[in-house]
Image 1 (cartoon, rainbow, N blue to C red):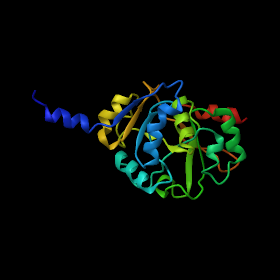
Image 2 (spheres, rainbow, N blue to C red; image 1 turned 45 degrees about the vertical axis):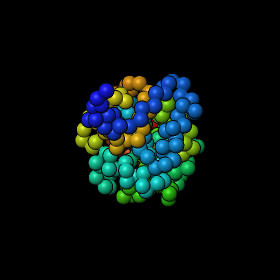
Image 3 (cartoon, one colour; image 1 turned 135 degrees about the horizontal axis):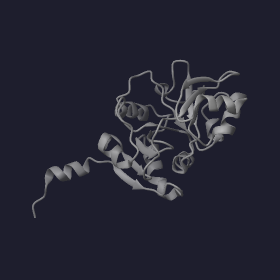
Image 4 (cartoon, rainbow, N blue to C red; image 1 turned 30 degrees about the vertical axis):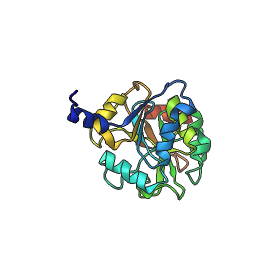
Length: 223
């Protein structure tokens, strides 16, 4: 029987796809993704609105791979997600009273809070001021992946910089191919705007990016 070599090579170049129940993600089902992160590889996974790209933010080799996949210019910080507030405290110097108030109101959910990062994160992932944007996502699978990894992970959108973001695993595979080691397929995501980003280092919030949560809703929640 003749073998279509081109078709075989194309399939071989694709990342692994790991089907996981998005509502009840079990740790055993996510173990291949955890192993890939521990090995410094790039993993795609669903978040509240879009598919994201996860790496271990402490590894310089993983950060290099992430920026290469994204074609992202140096100096552009990368957001992180965590399983809970306890994990957030692993990577920030101080969870300010303002940040705690916003976390109590909006987490789990698509509000990213900017705080001063602790040493240990790869310098590519923080901005020039040494800050990092973090959130606890509403998506159960995203939270569970961070929980199983026992550390916050990156969550930048799963696309090349400047291109359309992906809301399905198949779109990630088509856009990024073998540059992603594994795609956690949790079905379609909601799409829409990304998370709202707020600087919470001081006593008053500062809007850095308005996303799915309107800025006036954030302010009203703090009144």
